[in-house]
Amino acid sequence: MSYRTRLLGAAAVFAALSAPAFAADCEVTHWWTSGGEAAAVAEFQKAFDALGDDKWVDGAIGGSGDTARPIIISRIMGGNPPCATQFNPGKDADDLIDAELILDLTEVAEAEGWRDIVRPSSQMDSCTRDGKVWCVPVNLHSAQWMWTNRKVYEDAGLEPPKTWEDVVAAAPALQAKGVMPLSAAQGWPINLLLMEVMLPALAGRDAYVDILEKKNAEAAGGPEMRKVFEAMDEARKLVDPSTIVPQWNDAVSLVITGKAGANVMGDWAQGEFQVANMVAGQDYDCLPGLGHSPMLNTGGDVFYFPKNEDPAVTAAQLKMASSMISKEVQVAFNLKKGSLPIRPDVDLAAANDCMKKGLAILEDPNNIMPSPAQMMQRETQNAIRDLFNEFFTDPSMTVDDVQAQFVEIIENAPE
Image (cartoon, rainbow, N blue to C red):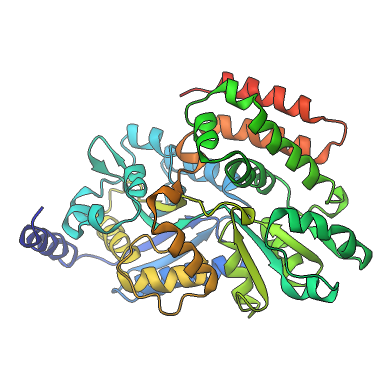
């Protein structure tokens, strides 16, 4: 599409959006409820409310995405849809699209050239089906980060760790001072530690994709995957089950307050450090790929807009989608969220050391890998999550046991 054609298209779209219409109250459902997340979503709300008389009505759902997704889908299928809703890139909205319950964003996406400004291209691919655009990507989140509190290690007479092996080696000294070597949260954070972080960092990117996307059961039962389970066995020995907390941000808080030395969590943890006024590279460190591998996955967040018979709501939905991907809002939102902007043409002079590390890694396309949500059906992800949580919390389950059950899940996983 030529630049002139794009300008004409954008003019047509926004002429339609600016036509007289009643104001709309636009309920937005999401599961961003921690301190850093709330600060970030407030930037979306502020930008949308500034566009006119339409109002953002916050519909935050407590808990994780695993809790929120079924509620959101049930509302949409049941005829009580929100105006907009958060999902992750992947297959979660496919049934809603097939049922013609999601607003088609193709016109505004083409008018603004989303395909040209979104990086990496896989994020737009996740929003595109049958040549049409169904969602707006708003950030690039990566899971492959380990967070450490510098003061904790220095107070124990240790150098801050540079690798996973350093964290393990430092464990006795921290435990002697009453500090947890590793904090953990129940549910999906344990799955993230093993499947999204340890697997690519210790077995390699090829094994990660081979097992999760290609459903290679032989690789799932092979020696490289065994190394991953052995590392997870090592990790669970660092964590007293009684100290496993309910939510991911609780586990990050233990590092922030110096009660734990390290936590493995996605880059959204950075928002919590910022709320605590801690400085990256001074008060805390962020180690991609457990200090081994500078690879990041291409997860993140997207927003879908369920169809609504009220034209005022439809107009508000299109304005919200455009606002979320605009340069100014991308900067404001992602600096608070700890994630990376979905477009590379923004001014990130205010980015901290951890965000700069992430941006540098993404400069090389070979460092980018898909997230599990982009490779596997939700039912398979849930089965793996449950297995890994059982392994992490049940000392009687051996490495052989968990690997055998993992192979069975991969063998039976749908494409």
